[in-house]
View 1: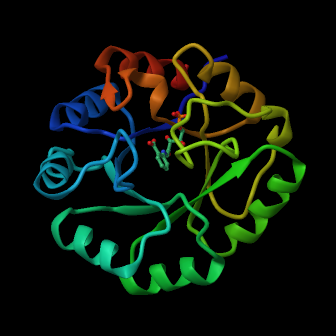
View 2: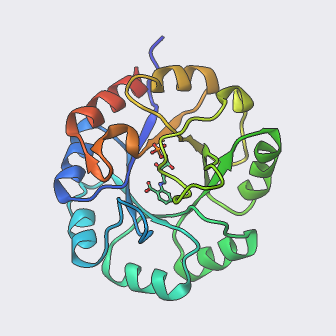
View 3: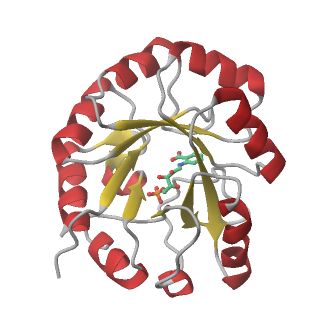
Length: 215
Ligand SMILES: O=C(O)c1ccccc1NCC(=O)[C@H](O)[C@H](O)COP(=O)(O)O
């Protein structure tokens, strides 16, 4: 069955042409990754150039992991952003602090591996404007996200929270339609599933992913 209205976020753009591919595909959100250890890390003038390549209506999301005010101040002074995505171990207090200081809508990413993780989502929903329900990284993982791993979608099938939420974790052009069907997600997010190599986005995969998500 067709799923009109599914919104797509493509995360970890590393060049201005990626933004053009995201816009051409009809995605709604584009993520810039400010975590220095990520293969998708961007900074300074390049990050600004990518951000400025976004057409009106395509929301730019800045992704941070346990960022301090100094990092957030520096990025936001240079790079226009519409949302902040917090992908580390930020506490509810820290989320509120960031929200008050920068006045931007916040997406809190939460890793899920079991029902206990799912139960934590309601707490975060009280402090964030949107949730990103991602696969929990393995203990030895170098990155807290962008690992291309799925989780058991049945854990959240049909679930709703008090704020909008995005499904993430190991989504690809080939499995996203099934993930949407099983979970009831209205928004989906992908990083590695639309890349030809870590940090290298593939425009054709971005187009296929978006089309498959939207049915
Ligand atoms: O993508 C990264 O490199 C990354 C690094 C550190 C924290 C978060 C990161 N990505 C966050 C995302 O929103 C990803 O899109 C999400 O984790 C799903 O990734 P993937 O399984 O590769 O689609």
